[in-house]
Image (tube, rainbow, N blue to C red; front, side, top):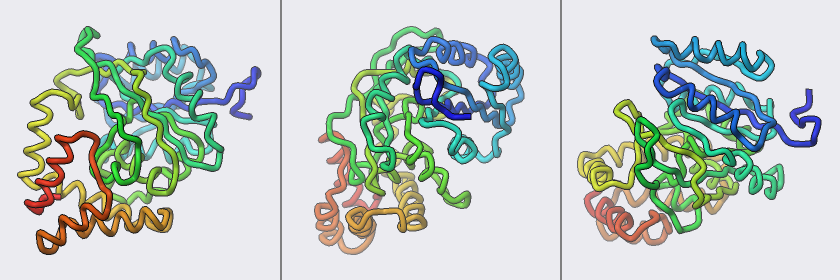
Length: 314
């Protein structure tokens, strides 16, 4: 069956990953039904939930029809691998794909805004749309907005930070195929950060929308929360000093070298220079950092990057 519906609209596969999400899952599911873009199906991968999550998804499948909802069992290797696994499974089943967390609420125009941009990109070019979010509390009360990024998405930026949450990401078939090629033995730090890195690294396109499309729920069980508060900034600084940031960069660099056959020549050069900022003498590290062009989005974060380079914590 063609992904295109009877009115000529491309199909979107919503890729939902769950784990003990009964508290907020129904609101997320209901927000799919409110989408102004109506040609979508749901592929849900549940990772060993011990609560009512699976039952909620099964009821949803019965109500919406099995043709519209697929239920999978996750690989039990953490959230990142669950998203990568469902992406591999979904590859080829739609025209576009949208990752979804279990506890957010999608704004009604989320898919439509994403596809307005994605459909301007030639189909053979991997492309990802992501956006800012509205931060909300457990009861969906507004708490503020996620950080606004102004610099253009790029591989040189992706090497040091992720600017778009996976819960906002929508991508085309070329991007899905590229992500699905990620080997199962690749240690992915986070699915969304990896998507930003590999898509820009292979010459694909990433669009960051300053208009929020997701109500991003903050609660005590968040695996990854917002990053705008001073406590979040302090946590990032601690990651630099305790070596965690260096460990994450090492994993990303290793993953990229595993897939360097997909990188552009420019990206390979940037990667090599960035890798050289991690070792050698201090002057060499600083020179290679400048030559690489690697950067973060804000002045204060770039100062942190220089500090990390000086301390050999990159």
